[in-house]
Structures are given as structure tokens and as C-alpha cells.
Image (cartoon, rainbow, N blue to C red; front, side, top):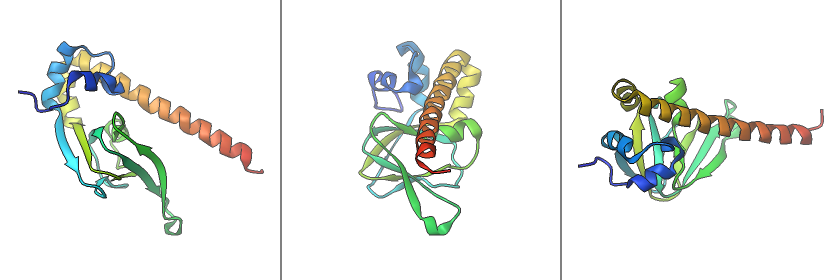
Length: 159
């Protein structure tokens, strides 16, 4: 029996599992775990360690970041919904959380840990490679988007 009740169609819609076949997903499904968080719960906290990627199955979360200057408070970075994910950066760079993630509603997620990716790298290197390439593409898209925003802000700020 699968550890995850989410069907392959949902998984295939998520960019991290893009390009994987149903036969390949058979090896991933037992590694996935499900969790439900109540509204207001903090899934990830900026500065804390994290070794898991979270795929939002249902619900909404706010990604927020505080600066080193305590007077600045928290800034909302993004609102994410079903089909989005958080925690990918920490899987790649093995650093603490870059931002906090707070549930705006009850949130149902499936997770994949760094340890599970390690298992895939040894037992199913082709699947592991596809997942890592998909992660790299997602992070690259986010970086391009951030670069675009920074360029727009730079144009608006007098030098």
C-alpha cells in the first residue's frame, strides 16, 4: 500500500515530478509522507534547519521573511497554493530555512526528505537525476523572477 493517498495525476502535475512515468512514481510513492497543519501553524521557520520539501495538496500558505534589522518586521514574499512547494532550496544547499512558511488555512501536504532523495540516488539514479533537474529548473525560474523584480525596483529607485 502507498504511503501517500495522492494519485499519480496530481504528482505528475507538480514540476518536481515532471517527466516521470507511472512506473517510476511507484518507487517514489512509498517515500512520500502526508501531513495536515492547522490554520496559523508554522511549517518552516526562517533560520531553522530543514531537510524536507513540502508539496501543497490543499490550502494556502504565506512565505515571509524577516531582515536582520528587527525594526523591519516580517515581509510577505509570496502566497502559495495547491500544486506549489516549499523547502526546495534547503534540499539543494543544505542550509537553514531562507524564509518562514505559515498556514493561512488548514494545509494538507506531502513531503519528501533529503534522506529519501539520497535513497533514490543509490537505488534509482535516473529518477533521482530527473527530480534534481526539475528542482534546479524550479529554483532557476524563481531566481529569474526575482532578478526581474529587482531590475524593476532598481529602475524606480533614483541613483
